[in-house]
Length: 347
Image (cartoon, helix red, strand yellow):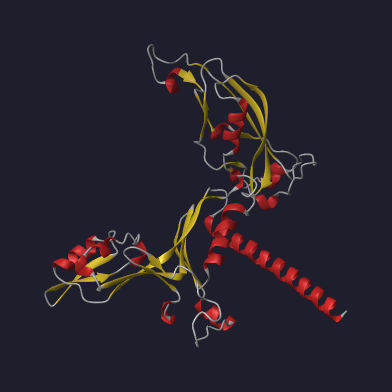
């Protein structure tokens, strides 16, 4: 591996090279790569590319894959949320069994700020400080106003389908005053829980507790959290004429454009981040030696989709706080271990 390629993953027709990092001493003979805090600060950057109420796309630049993956795993498994943990089934005459119905209820994301609640231990009683209570009471019956011969269950019956909007928050203690400005509720009101027919009834009480995705997926605040390396397309020789159009068609739309210079069509890379690295261009002999495909090893394109419980920009901030806390714990443990070894040597 050449020194200039140390932060590039090289994409070839039949293989991928430089897949392992080389940011450690003695990777290159007679050439050191010293780590300095100043150099890290100069190269490190976070750029927000796109932000919506539920999604965020950002670039994490200048870090190793281990850091990027730690951030991804924290987003999935270590940011606390409130979710339905216990379902007290009083009556269920519907077609879905109690256990399956409870599981479906547990996966409904609940819009509640977890910072306002305490962790509940297994031996603790539910209180207004560690538990949120919902009630679900719904019964299906015939719709007397339906026209004869009506076939649509939504028109023929009342409450033929049970949705998350029918979960009723039952404030306990001072919760009604604490959350007056932002009442606790399901994130989405149109989640189908079950279907009923006349004579079916469901009555149950639901208790929400604080937890993390490491314990159960229902606590995870993200629907997806993924990253990929920034693609890089290097045109080594000019690609002109009909070859330029074929070259453009080898990539997804928007990656390569055709520019005309002095009456000659020429291929130009305009947005490599849209590339899926299909390697289609490497199948064509006319481009052999004219293009080089790589990925930037320390440039990560993150895509995070929130379940709606926590805003995506806050998720990133909270994940970084957890990562910093983990680093502090590791530093403390390492310092204690080093101190213990030093005391043993002195003895």
